[in-house]
Image (cartoon, rainbow, N blue to C red; front, side, top):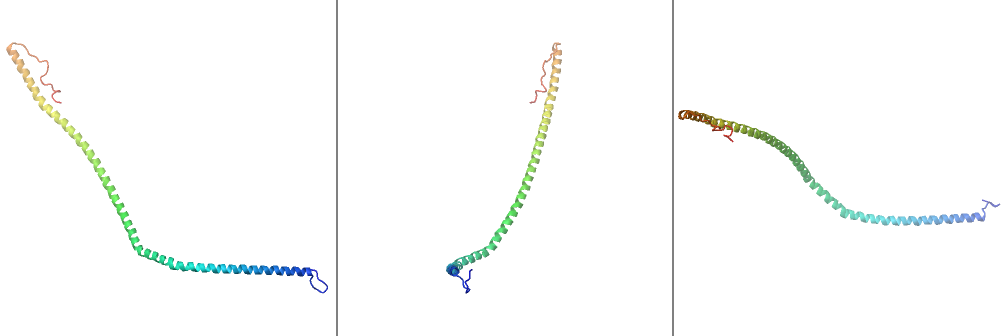
Amino acid sequence: MALQANGRATMNEQSLLIAFIAVTSVAVVLQTLILAGMFFSTRKMGQRIEALSTKVEEQVLPLVEKVRGIVDESAPQIQTVITNLTETSNLVRAQAGQIDETVTEIVSIARTQAGNAGELAERTMQRMDHAAEAVQHTVTSPMRHLSALMEGVMAGFGEFVGGRKVRRTTKAVPSDEMFI
C-alpha cells in the first residue's frame, strides 16, 4: 500500500476496500437469506413431522397395542400347541418303534413258520414214502406167497395128471408194478 505524505491510503486502495466491503456485505445478506430459507424449510418440515407423529399416535400406536394384546392372549395357546406337537411327535416316535418291533417279530415268526412248513412237508413226504413201502410190502408179500402156492399146486397137479411140468414164463404178481 502506498501511503501519501499525510498517511492516507490512495484512492485506488480505497476503491478496493469499498468493493471488498460491498462483496462481503452481499455475501452476508445472501447467507442470511439462505439461513432464513433453511429456517422456514425446517419449520415447515417440523410441522409435517408433528402431523405425522400425531397420525402415528392416533392410528399406529392403538394398532400396536391391539397386536401386543393378541400376542399376549395367544402366547399360552401357542405354548399349548407347541407342547401338544411335542407330545404328539414323541408319541408317534414311540408308536413307530413299537410298529417296527412288531413287524420285526412278525417277520421272524413268518420265517420260523416257513421253516416249520418246509420241515412238515418233508416229514409228510417221508411218512408217505414209508406208508407206500408198508402197503407195498403188505400187499405184495401175500401175493408172492399165493403165487408160490399156486405154482406148487400147478406143479403137483401137473405131476399128478400127466407127468408134465407146467412152467410159467411170467410172474403172476410183478412186485415193482404193484404200486404206482
